[in-house]
Image (cartoon, rainbow, N blue to C red; front, side, top):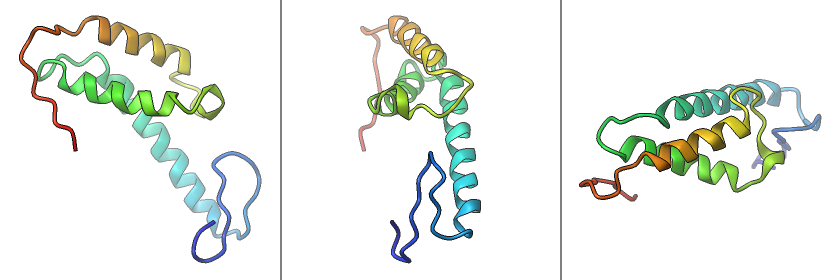
Length: 102
């Protein structure tokens, strides 16, 4: 619930005010954009493993919420998990890395 007393749910039909509809649509679009973009970055070899490492980190957080939280139909959760495993298996762990933790 936000400061204005409106209730938000990413899934479901509960909206306290009709004005929340555009916000929900925006959130859905942003989630799809993030998932598709990060999915494309899983196979990146740019800058060593840094790019794919960060993409895997984002997905690790999303995946930790369980299968029920995956709301994007393409790419599927199973495809992303497979691509994460492929990406991690290709990392050259003995190479010099420059991963920033913020």
